[in-house]
Length: 294
Image 1 (tube, rainbow, N blue to C red):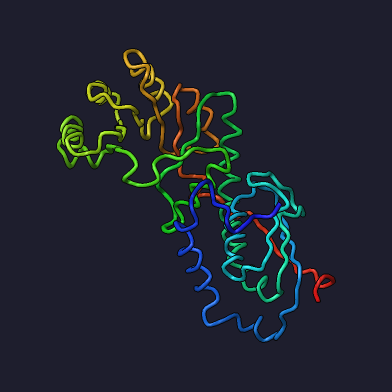
Image 2: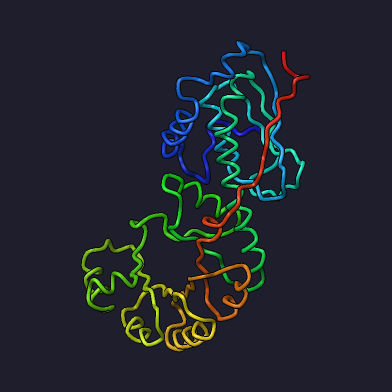
């Protein structure tokens, strides 16, 4: 499998990402890789990426694009498909090009794939634990500045689904919006006068007593925030009683340890930042095969 430089990431055109990728390379290369340039060698060589721990691989098309910007002659050939669960010692990708190009692109490409693979790996744990419950894992806007598109892409590779990508995607009325407007109804009335028609409306609820007023505002979704499992169950029952079509989302202090307990309350979605904020990088390494250079 060869990841062509013309490929995209989850349908995202490269022009949305290329400036970012080039800036990463510029940061690392600076005025030139003095170690590699000092070798004075431009021999052809081959490299192999290997996993040093088990995990779900994500970001291989990004790595291919990064090497393209180092040297369009580099061939980056994934050994596994995106989203594959690999084991320690397993080959992830093979590369061919000048040894100088392979060495100059190595660190940046590995870094982003290790980061994205860590997110995909932890997401997969959440998704696997919820199998059979009908509840879906949703991400949040707690992302690394500059990496949101790719971090949310990694969530999808791991089997999760994306909440809004940015503030322009949807309307989510939270506690500070309510406080600023002077109340739930006042906030929704003001927002509805100004937002584009197609945008959906989600309202955050922090207490059971807020639910009747929220239901009167006719949102498409309700976010139950930082409630105990007992309160979540009560809130779901109250909402479903009169508004079974409204989608219900739970968030706040969700972990692998309490995930099934939250799912058992009857919500449709569980939102968590953990797959991004708590993910450990998947350790990968590259080795140049000195028997195949020349």
